[in-house]
Image 1 (spheres, rainbow, N blue to C red):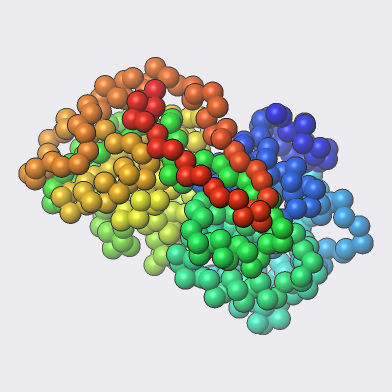
Image 2 (cartoon, one colour):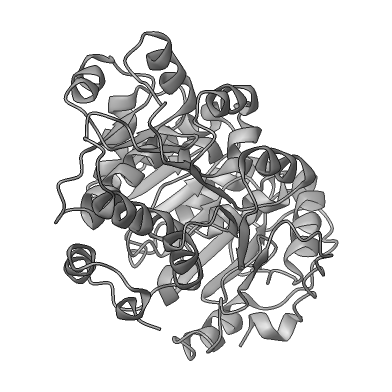
Length: 433
């Protein structure tokens, strides 16, 4: 299917052509027709599947073709958990709506509200917001949502992880009952389903690449290493000049700062991005990384949510996450849109239970790389020792992802109560194809 087959208006088609889009991703091809028909939507899609365009494009089309609503009213609201993601969504609306007269803006905390208030006073059709600043500006009388026709809750699982559930419920109470609502989440635990049921009306459901799977274009490896040697191992890996950019994950803000400091002492340009950084500092670090002024970006999970870097080829888990789904989100920053990517993880003895949980979730054993100067002093347990160099070499002969990748898209009514079958575990040999 191509975008031409989705019934999009000419201004949007022209914008997509400018962006170089020709063929929609599975989440886009399945969601856009449903949304253009006016259905509420419950979508399960992990990062990197193209979900922003899946909801932005039909919203733009609806607002452009609607009649009788002046632009001083906010007609579409997108709520998302982080500042970085809010900014990127706003940029997407700017790109897809470039040939329309729709006005949009983004509001988030951590910065002076003056410029945001000025934009709101001029009138906007589309508002992208983080929960705290949104409610703050509502309380001050700068935002009214009584004319809203479209509502999107994005990254709902992360919203709950960050403690925004009460803010989200307060926002829902401010919305008109008659509206189109869209709910996007990478995972669907019971708490998310309960929240979705309070927001959506007879929704359709789209599920693309469940969170338990990792893209087959990503070459994964684990290095068993003692905690004390992780910094030396990181410097050793980054000696490879072919790694032009690398996104490094830590579990804590302090850890991110320390890793960046250690790398800079070795003349490896690095910046840290986390919640204690000012908004200006975070945006500067992100811009420097995108422009390749900075070679390494060190991030915590919450700060990294929404980071979308073109041609990012290398992700390093300096510390293995204690939540298995987080691993999938982390390494999903690379290997996007069919491109090849590599993701390596440093695992000390205390993190091996986390690794076993991850391997159980994704249904495969991550290959072990023992070819490095800092092997762990502990006895190895758990994963099978698959030589990573051979694994990488084998994968390099298959630059094109298997046909049908991400094609297991399910669409049905979310209100039917049908029992969902759990996806079968992937066999290890599939990961090496």
